Amino acid sequence: MTTAIIGTGGIGSAIARQLASGGETLRLSSADNESARRLAAQIGGAAVVAAGNRDALQGAGTVVLALRFTVLKSVIDEIAGSLAGQLVVVPSNPLTLDAHGNLTRVLPEGQSSGEVVAGWLPAGARLAMAFGTLTADLLESAANRSPEPAVLFYVTDDDRAGEEVERLIRTAGFEPVKAGGLGQSSRLEVGGDLHDLVVGPAKARSLTGAA
Ligand SMILES: NC(=O)c1ccc[n+]([C@@H]2O[C@H](COP(=O)([O-])OP(=O)(O)OC[C@H]3O[C@@H](n4cnc5c(N)ncnc54)[C@H](OP(=O)(O)O)[C@@H]3O)[C@@H](O)[C@H]2O)c1
Image 1: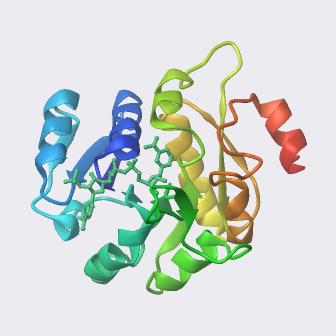
Image 2: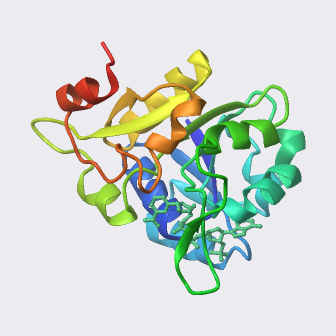
């Protein structure tokens, strides 16, 4: 199947490599497409560079917005006309650097980034927050672990989005575990109890209360 990846920096390129090695076809775009071109050349035939962000969605059923939180809304506005019927996957942490170079949360404490992003999407788009719990390095080193697979946590309010993001997580070489609805997204982000956690399915289910 085909997934669009908009943003081919640290996390976008790691997600792209993992999905391609699991058999996914990719359409890539980035701000000036230079990093997208380098990544496509590295991945080979499974990845093509799109003409731009909107073009990346052509023929794709899923789009991963691997962008810094502060540019998410402007890119969503740019591609909104093509998002109906799409699974939208967002790995972004709601962080930015303050004037002193310290990481700071861009949303008020307690406000869910998942609910904020859902409010930016047009009707008909299905959102899952996923692929942002591990660093890019960990995402690549923990994939396809054996004998016990490592878990990637996700949150969504939409059952169909849940099924679709679970397929994508398995394609990337992980076992999916739902951590709740979009209101629980802070558990996945930097500082959340499920962030940077490499655990197997049994431990993951005990942490989330999943069956
Ligand atoms: N890096 C990690 O290990 C990691 C892990 C988990 C979660 N996250 C989260 O994922 C998000 C992205 O982090 P990152 O480290 O991947 O950031 P990054 O390395 O700065 O990459 C950002 C990407 O966004 C692209 N971009 C910026 N504006 C764009 C636009 N208007 N249209 C299309 N693409 C645009 C950039 O394009 P160019 O390449 O052309 O400049 C770049 O490829 C952050 O919220 C971060 O917290 C990161």
